[in-house]
Length: 277
Image 1 (tube, rainbow, N blue to C red):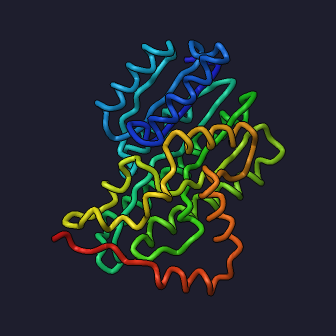
Image 2 (image 1 turned 45 degrees about the vertical axis):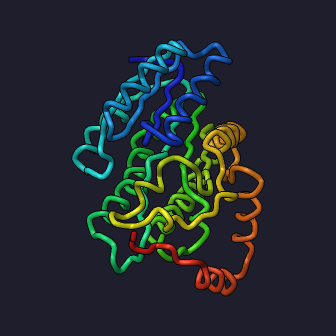
């Protein structure tokens, strides 16, 4: 199957992933390329993927391939990787968006949940990128968006595993970008702050109150802002993207503050991972 443009999105059934699908489809339509674009949508929920696929095909006339897959399952990933390794296209965009979180102290975390977070946030991202790189190197233009987090720049109590996994995503993206500096492949790590994607509901542990989410309302960034900023950043070949002025400001402070100060700030940060009443 050949196609002028191919877009692969993980975690595509909701949140940033779903918004990325619409954003890219709209961009392709504006450039009169929508009918020559194939989307490969990856997520666990087959029903949600099919609904999104039907809408994309109906609105934009693009080709959509649904790939239901639990990225935390190594056997399921193996079949997916084989499929992705065979993708060939002139213009390619890979959006590694899938991610899992867990609010709560590490000492009381579930080992299986920790394993799944490592598999989805890091292992799957690396394996999918590696599977698609050979074809990307043959394409005329190729782009990689790795969705990290503002949390990547901080060691966050009650959010230790997630923050550490996103630090890996940023470091991996920076190194890969340097390796591919002389190629036509752009690599951008996106570091959004909190956004209303439903992520918090999934990350919250059973029996915990919604009050545990450690962010204030004023700090939130819209999904549209994150997606628009990320898509623009990768096209312009920017190494990192901090969507919205407030997130850029916080990111600038965190990256330049001395480590002792960050430790102090995190030590006095309100701990809201409390049992529900």
